[in-house]
Amino acid sequence: MSLTADMLTAVDAKLAYAVRAFTATGTIASYNGPNDVLVTFDGDTQAVPAKMFGGVYAVEGDRVGCVKFGTWWTIVGSYTPIVVPPVDLVTFASGTLSSSASSIVLNNIPQTATHLRMYVQGRNTNTGTGDTDLRVRLNNDSGTNYMRYGLEMSNSSTVTGIFTGTATDYVICDLPNNGNPSGQVGQGIVDFPWYTTATQHMIVAHGVSAGTNNQMRIEVGRLAGAQDPVTRIDIIPASGSMTSGTTYLLYGLV
Image (cartoon, rainbow, N blue to C red; front, side):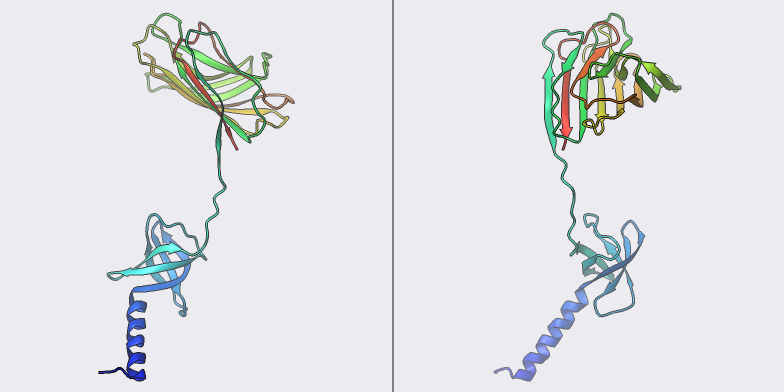
């Protein structure tokens, strides 16, 4: 039997209704919770409740595509393009000490990034089971120009406030002394925002030591006064030396 034009039109209408019953496009009207939204479907004026898949990123006003699962309309994607500024990490310096050293000097730091991030991990040659501060200086400045605020906690639950207004360097973490069991290390992560500007340089550090004291510290501070862009970072322990195997890594965030 051949199908007439009227019959084909009726079939198309039925198919369109069936598709419309399970898929739709619309605009997010508002958020009611992390995965609960109100959507106004195209051609309608009344917003209806809908869910949103966890991997979907969409905000109020974005056009979205929906599929009906059971009784719930669920947003499965957004038609609005998402522009995420790229962040590139460029390695400026890295290394591992092959023998103990009283300092690590990172010199001639490129001025091609916006921020710096540094990682340090290691131990100290001092005897005993305590910890020794690991510190940095910028541009070889050893004057009393470093200010830092922070919190420090060790094995006890007591949290100690830190304030130093006129230090000659900046503490970033604690390194376990050589009397601690092998394998126990201290780690520090340090940020130097906007290091290429000629201004007071901010330093943000957080570190932890797995030595007997289990030191943890979070600090923020600055190198005061008008400064040149950061082209050199010295890593120095308060006493003793950094042991063989101590590693460091300096990134530029472009």
